[in-house]
Image (cartoon, rainbow, N blue to C red; front, side, top):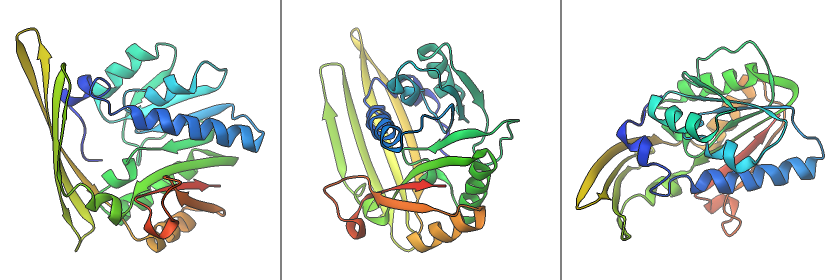
Length: 239
């Protein structure tokens, strides 16, 4: 996977990038409640700073988080000392157990740089899923990536964040640049991160999931105010 966060990881939560994990946790808990079957285990691929684990609250669900970023995992281990975190790539890691729920959230699928890589990831998710398990992931669409084509500035008394991006419609990809200045006494720490993201036509995603062995695939718009055809982010539930 690309975009292994370095110095940015220690400010990731502080700058507000953990908000998606909290909203996703609400949606996942609602799904579990609606389904009526509580998973005994969760595998969280690209777990980042462990915010999802924290937001899910205390439970007896066995949780394992996997991420390629040492910086992200350092934050995660400090935040969730009782959870297990492994540094590895979501598409290639091999664990000696299966899980009732496998997650791959917050643009993680967009970080995969080819359809071949995406297919490999889906197959690995299926490999680690129990027979009646559920695989959940989200992905930004071309509409979502195109929205990075602007300059955004967020200012507080503690930091300033400047983000902008370039969308390339011919290959459905975007270069995203994030620069932050975090106040430290009378000085500022500068943090810079470049992120490369790519999306894929829904038909290619469905075919890749079918090839990986998923028999049931449900898709919805993550934003309930957006129609499926105009969604900026898609939410997939697979089994």
